[in-house]
Length: 205
Image 1: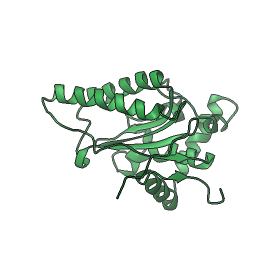
Image 2: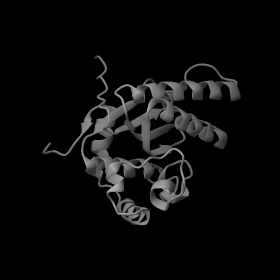
Image 3: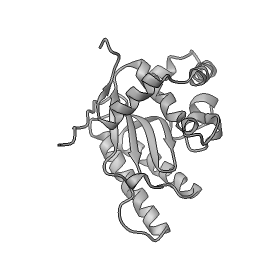
Image 4: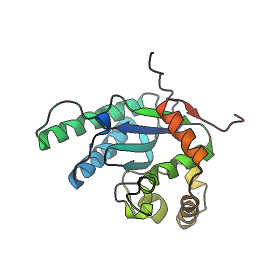
């Protein structure tokens, strides 16, 4: 069966997932996480992408990214992933692939799903039982979005900015949303849409 074509629209956020080959580890040490994030920052700027949320897990990663152009995200992912694989192969004296094929993604066509993806991404370490609260996980955007820590990578989406009239209000509202969690139906819809390259939209759209 042919692969479903990615659906990408300039200015509309994409939820992205990239897994390690056979779900094997792809981040081995703190230096690897830092290297990946440096590449993400650089390539997002070069290719015109706004990164709203991210989490780097041991064997996969999630991001919410808005591209300025239709091909912006594919260019970003190509260059970041290539550079990261070269880094890993050099440092750990290995060869061959690291990633499980191409990344998967879904368009988030509604504001509610954009915010749901924010939380889905940053709550991933909690669902994986790695930490009991997202603030305790170092390799995500939660500290920027919820706690006001400076990030040279994260750019707030307009729906995040609409949470309040100033940064303190937005962070307070966002923390409350994260605290409320996500229901299983929303989690399953995000997973299915992303793994199948579908569109996330309210049912009445």
